[in-house]
Length: 289
Image 1 (cartoon, one colour):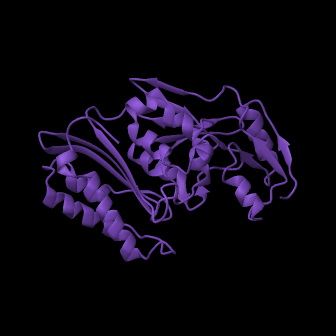
Image 2 (tube, rainbow, N blue to C red):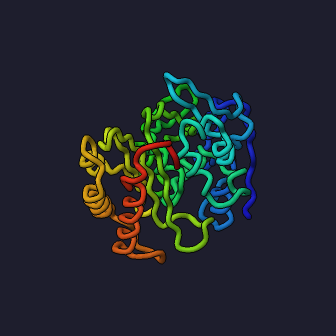
């Protein structure tokens, strides 16, 4: 591995100032993705800026009015184990729980996961379905961005020079909603998904009152399926309608063709995931993942 210097700032402002002063510097938290890129020679930073000792320390907070804030330094396993996340956002706990293995989850951070923008990552589609906003901090100011705007493309974000992700903001979930995260892998369960699906659905007396659908992994960035959502909203959730929506979702995705399969195969997988997630027989009752 190439040699590099390591800075360990104590505050967000210090970290952003160091990054702003050196365009070649890279922030590092868990390092599970960045260190691999460095070893492969795809990234050659002379300076790494550690985000693991920033103050205030990582944590997850919740209020009924505002929802949750997850500090970017939280590891994926901390998200999985959080009582707040498990109670109010079980879909996110599930999406983080199926990332790689326990060793990776204890090192990788939720902020780093989003900033890296691996197209085949598990948390982003779940966060899209939860309508997450990203808290972004610079040297002198902090701004927020809807996750859909933050994710620009494969390995491309809305981060500007000298900015880092400092938090994930989640609004309170819809009362009485049921959430589901499904992934399909072509090899082991620890693999990155070939395709994934996140849904948040609220059904009352058989009628779909609210729905959010996000597809991940198949394309360059996860995508909210707003056309399919509109088709479902306000209508009885019945099998023929679900089948129509599954066809619509599959047709509205432009999958990346790779060794895992061509577009036709991936669309078939996505259609199957939609049929499972929106099964009318499972649409009401206890919220689940």
